Image 1 (tube, one colour):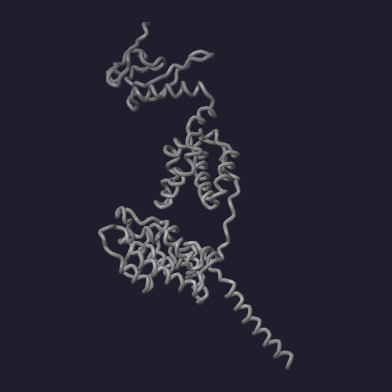
Image 2 (cartoon, rainbow, N blue to C red):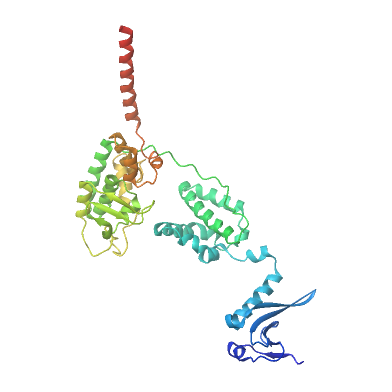
Length: 383
């Protein structure tokens, strides 16, 4: 029987008529691809694979559910798979291609603010080093060298970037692109102990310095108000800098994208006054960028670095204002569960990291306890 060959198209495949016996029409464009037509009229794509042990016909799928181009692609995938082992096939995808392709899912399932942070770290810290490197060729030693180098200048930033890399490479393992995660087992840089918060006198000096700068340069007024709000609310910097007018509801803030999930922040009178004096410029942001009202103010707040040096608190970070709120609340006798809700923590155990007291308060407590015990001892001796 003569072999039937023609250039297969979706149209002529659909027109193939059944005969009394099964027949196959072979594609002239891709060797080995054919359409098998049974007497019942059922049509399916097949691939004739030739090897050392002879030829074997592989069924690709019904022609009614697959286009000719899809069938050709399946043939090509089979041929490519036979020319290389699984390790070689997986090594082709680079780190950057994985992140923008199948690895995108592990980023998109995060909160919007987390996604923004991860994408910045990818662009600035990970793509320049690992972007063009095939996933399977990234070694533990490569990651360790990169982490050590980054840690010399920014140990905290290196920790954050390592977490992102670890997460993406874990996803690569799940997707079958890697057998093991080369970033696993690298010890992170130790975090500094959170033992710094502002005393009442330091708060007064900070307030006066903010007033001076806001009066001398009106462009500093919004930065000064952001710093005051951080101290009055205990919010995180990002929660205030990216605050939208739609989030402000009278004396509360409804934060949909807080770190631990949506939460309400109850505002005291001074905080309400600060928000009330912010100009309504038509921007969605409470503190819009002066250059582009469609974006929030930069989170870097240069005013903070000027002010803290002036008032002698150069070792205080902006995040320490949040510690200050927690610590003063504890000193005022506020129960830890209430402080935990004030800060937006899911668990009160997290609050213990922030609710520390300074040496002066500890010394004063030791004096009071010593005096009480000494009085009891004296009483016992006299009796």
